[in-house]
Length: 332
Image (cartoon, rainbow, N blue to C red; front, side, top):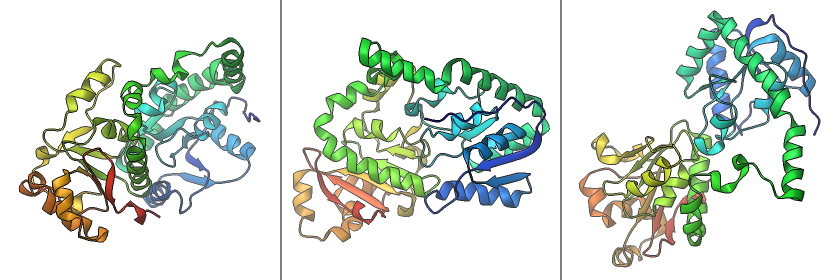
């Protein structure tokens, strides 16, 4: 790959630079940019050659990034390698972002539009803080993050079998539960794809998983940092706490649905429900498009707690955790 860098620039213009595309494929990015445009903050938006981007990053106090869908993208290192101060969206632990780019040390992150505006205003008023972080990350890039080091890691792995733990699959806290549940991949992938698409399109998709669903489904969904993830009372969260605690991780993002009281059906974007064969027989004569109505009828616990009336996407699992009903074909 071609590495585009820039000489260090100490004196910066007090502005926020966004370099890249704002299109229909990036709904959250478009929302943030449009909101910042209306906020009166000094914002520069451009696209073009990487050399142009490096120049803008080097001469701007703040360089803004927003992932497509909770992923680490190349823009993070493009900003840092040019000496820019990186302000990017907060990602899940599963991305490895916090362990690699360490917010507060080499960059800063935001979770919501309000937090983004708050942090932009802070750094505009405290430019020395932004420049100090940018300088630290700039030096770290040339001492450790430059692609030549990753190429060396790759060659050393291929020819010597030596792979740093950071890149090993077993360093992921969900490795064991994922391997143990590999026979469920046909169920896990469609559910994850539906959740991922909701996460791309909406700011805070709300997901409810019924108590007898496999815990690995919740573990999978922790990839997506902006999901509001709920489980039905009785869900075996302790199985996941054991895994994540041993790796210094936690499940504070996962909440028990009863804690929020009664909700209207429109509050849920995705429902993952497991029912018994007896319940499936009761609903087998209905068309799939009636699934949202049927969900209320087949699970008395959910009906009694008035938690679910309808949802954008739904999956109904059978006794073997296979997908028996789904309306996720509506995606796209």
